[in-house]
Length: 390
Ligand code: CMC
Image 1 (cartoon, rainbow, N blue to C red):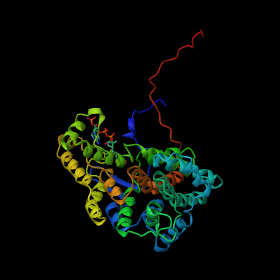
Image 2 (spheres, rainbow, N blue to C red):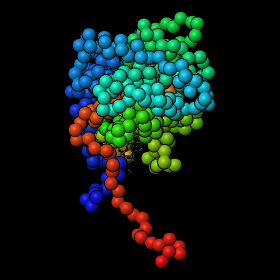
Image 3 (tube, rainbow, N blue to C red):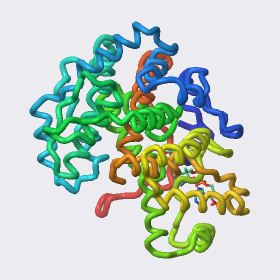
Image 4 (cartoon, rainbow, N blue to C red):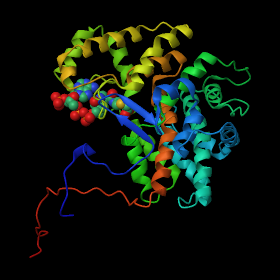
């Protein structure tokens, strides 16, 4: 106290050191542990990148195999936890289901959730990586009224996830390699993004000594908002609304520029990127390819491109250095895969999970970590007496 700087939104404040992810927002560069995102998205897998984020180096083939096997062995949810889903309305947003079920997971592992015990931390890292996709798929199944499937541990991470979402009981599930690879790529692109709002939330909650389940559940809630992960859902709703209303793209952009009713171009702008988001570049490059490989033609993709073109050539967006971010084109791909709009941010959460875990762990091991506790500038009343007190 005494020397506090006012910094709304932490625009100028570093709250930690970190060795996980590097971003150069002016140049549009993103690297995990030094590896360019473009190389990882093209050549790696979700679990390999998860290991990289968690442990700092790429795993050897045997390390990766063991990691993968351990995760496969932990995919089952306790049968009692499955009943948790039936206590929620079928209209529940899958993000709320995901965060509450993640918090509920904690109750099954209270005896093994000491943040200071490396074995507990390791085990819960595995548990979260294994069980969150299952919870996510059950949130999806619940919302469409279909039966939950058991995880198929003969399948790799992404195929298992897709089967849990799109498989139906008593019918064989056919793997679609195009869809698997496309989803794997998207998940890799989301795995980490240094101190974004949800990761900072995970760190803040974790700094109090709360366990991984509680911290990750808080991160999911932070991701839910439309200015953060919720933007991918908001983009699709925006595109659908423009299409259905018959409003021209020009008119919509005018409304954004005039800040009419606070309307924003969702999927545009970023706190750190003042250049094209390198993830958006990769997603855009593959959107056409994936849609055509999946045999889907979606006029919303054309609409999104039209909006982008218009915005990138407009002074309002140029002056403010607003470019498409990762959420601008992902929704069109998720939609083509068959995910309902309300699942989009859940997919972001599954993608971001390794990053949250890596940051939580890095923070626990940092000897300089303190409880996160911002200052304020008090603007309220000065001392006064309660009526009747003299
Ligand atoms: N549409 C219209 N105007 C915008 C937009 C947008 N999408 N984004 C920023 N601006 C304007 C903003 O109104 C402000 O204008 P002015 O100087 O006239 O007041 C100026 O650009 C600077 O914006 P800011 O709000 O001060 O920037 P910020 O760093 O605080 O916010 C942001 C970053 C991502 C929250 C914001 O750009 C935004 O709301 N974008 C839309 C939501 C979105 O796509 N979020 C996803 C972010 S990327 C991945 C993720 O985290 O999920």
